[in-house]
Length: 88
Image (cartoon, rainbow, N blue to C red; front, top):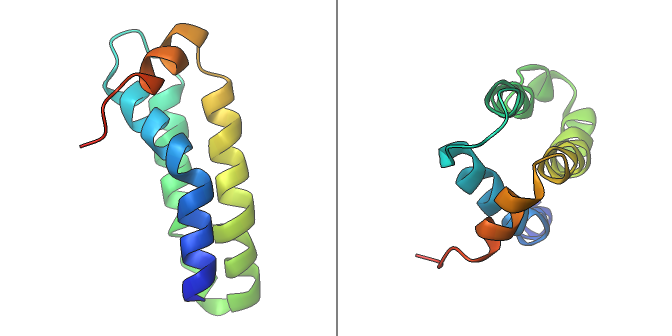
């Protein structure tokens, strides 16, 4: 389980960084904030505790794919400027 978490973190690190930058950007699309909030609620859904296998598939496969799709829908100038943000 710990290995899966680190794989998930490594694969979605750039998408998480880009989405965090886009949330604070002035020109972000209106739909982006509600989409990220819904994705976060889906990630921490209570049915993950009832069906652990389905929860693992959701958390480590479906949620990163949705996050990556949302980041690709962002305007190009936001994605490009997110790549130039220094890592703190």
